[in-house]
Image (cartoon, rainbow, N blue to C red; front, side, top):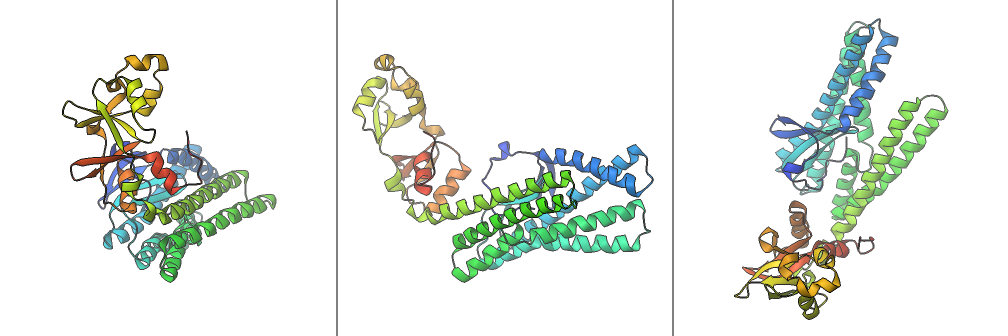
Length: 381
């Protein structure tokens, strides 16, 4: 199970995965990667059943598929533990997504306090631990070497391993959120907690990869198990690295000043030749198009303008390479840094109109915002 921290927001009509409807009021999605896992686990578990029980080929693969369904149910219950705890503390939940390597709960905002962060993070492993204990007791009570006994035993092992592994203190695991909450409580700096837990997460990922290689060399892990666990380690490393990046970006939110960051708009009358507009407009300004009363009605698309050959620009009007401002999202100049980033996430685009009341005072290029937040990151030209 991955970190349930707020994920980049997808617009509802572009959310990846197959909708499974709502569970306890939460939208649930199934990522297509789960289908690959379902096939692999069905085959592997079907072969395991053949070695343990006298079951015909079609039936043992049906048992394998049943185990996949039970496993996905366990993952869903794990994520519901996070979601219900978040909702109890006033945090909205956008969706639960089941993936090949687990799942994640997408929340509409971060936990307001370290205590809430800790409770939400530990809820999932607590559910998995409870499921593992119940399944283990069932396996002990059921007749030995029967189908239901084997299913109960495998579910017990799977849930207990999930609870244990997810409790490791490194992001993006749930234990990493708990560590973040602890560092946050001590330092009163959420970003410090996130970065610390991210670095520990990298150590967990590297340690997991080293351990599975040693187990494979020792003959205790199959090649399939090696590939799967190396994929898990790679995913953990990516998640930990993203957490470190998010923490460093978050520290720079106070630097966002829309009044200073927005580029001025140099508006020319509709019908002005592109060459003339570019000659008159300052390099740092955004070219705009004004109507007959001087009102801004469109912004020149720099990419479209650059695609016009130099010899044709005196004959091409700015209107031909501009788009109306009705489709450009507006951001009030007084918003704070975190609010600006949240607005950009919720309304993806290349440009935003910075406004004061009804007046447009400038244009925010998302590339300028990205450069401010990650000054050392190489940007695409």
